[in-house]
Length: 520
Image 1 (cartoon, one colour):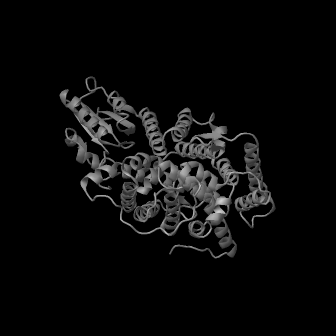
Image 2 (spheres, one colour):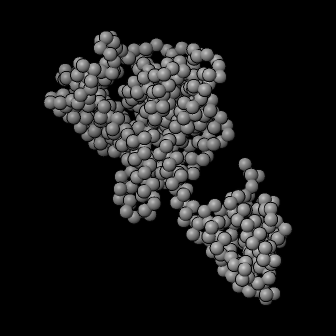
C-alpha cells in the first residue's frame, strides 16, 4: 500500500543513506525555526520528526521531506508571544483538520492553476530565502546579548570548511555514487574539526547563542519521546476566535508550499505525486503535532532537494530521516552537537545552487515581458514578505494578464444572407474582460429589421457575458427589431432573462457547462 521499499537493494541503500543525510540537515533548521516562533528547540525537533514520519507514510509524494519551516514559523510568532505555546498547539491542531478537509474536498488539484512563471518565481525566491537563512550561521553572540558577524580566524575557518564541504559534494559523485556526497561531506568535515581540535562553531554553539546566558551553559539537544496531551486551553468560543485566523493562515501557507514543492519534485523525478493525498497527509501530521507538543510545519524544499539529489526516491527515505532524527534526539544528542555548522551550511549552499532556476536568467529577455515581471514579482515577495502572498499575487497578476489579452480577441464577421438578415458570426470568448468590446461590435440603430448572432465559434464564459447578452437584446427590442441567437449553449439559455425567448435551440448547440454550476 505504501510502497515503502523498492525491489532494488541499491535503491534501499540509497534511501537509507539519503534519509540519514537529511536527518542531520534537519537539526539546525528545526532549532532555528523554533527560535523564530518563540518556542523551545525541542518543540521544533519534535515537529520535524512527526511531520517527516507521517507525511512519508501517508502523504502523496514519496521522497518529499516535511518538517518545521520558516514559512509557518513566522505566522506563529505573535500567537506564541501573546497567548503562549498551548494556544499554538491548539492552532496547529485546527490547521491540520482544515488541511484534511481540503484533501477530502479534492482542493489539491487547483495547484495546477499556478502558471509556470509563478513556479519559477517560487523556486528562485525560496532559493534566495534558504541562502539568506544560512547567513545567520556567520553570527556569534558577543556576550552582551547581541549577535555580531564572525571575524578574523573564526571567519576564515568557517569559510574554508564550507568550501571543503561544497567541493566534496561537487566532485565525489564523479568518482562514486555509492554513498551520498552530502553525508560524506558532513562526516569528513566533522572528523577534521574534531581530529585537529579546530575552533569551529558547532550545532550546540548555535543553540547556546540563541538562549539567555543563564540557560546557555546547560543547553542540550537531548530529549525524550513526545507525549500525548490535549492543548491546555479553554474549550470556548473565545479560544476559537483567537486561534482561527492563525489556523487558516497556517493551513493555507502549509498547503501552498507543500503542493508547490510536490510539483517541483514531480518535474525533477519525472513522476507525479498526488496532491489531494498530500493535503490529507499534511493535515494528519499537523493534527498529531497539536496533541504531541510539536510546532507543525509543511514540506521543505531544501531538505527535499537534499534527499532527491542523494538518491532518495521512495517513502523509505522520509521514514529513515524521521527515525534517524528521533534516534539522534534520544541517544545521539552529543554526536549532533559536534557537527560543525560549516558542514551544514555548505550542504545548504549546494541546495541553493541546485534549486535556483539559473535558466530563468538566460530566458528572461526572451519570454514575454509580463511573464518576466511575474517571475521577478513572485521571487521578490517570497523573499521580503511571505510565500503564500507571493503565490497568490502571482496567480492574480497572471489571471489579469490573461483576461486582458483575451479581451482583445473578440471580434465579428458580418454579412447579409439570402433572406436579407444581417448575420454576425462571433469569434472569441465573452467574459468579464471582453464585454466592453463585445457591446461595441453591434449597431442596433442602423442594422436591418432581422438580425442573427451566430455563437458557433464563440462561448459565454461567465455571468458578465450573460448580462451583456441580455443588455444587447434590450437594445434591439427597443429599436423594434428581431434578434436571433443561434448555437448558444443550453446552460446560457437557462440563465438568460431578457434574451431567452430570442434563442433558436438546435440539437447541435454546444453544452460546455461553463456558465452554470452543474459540474461543481
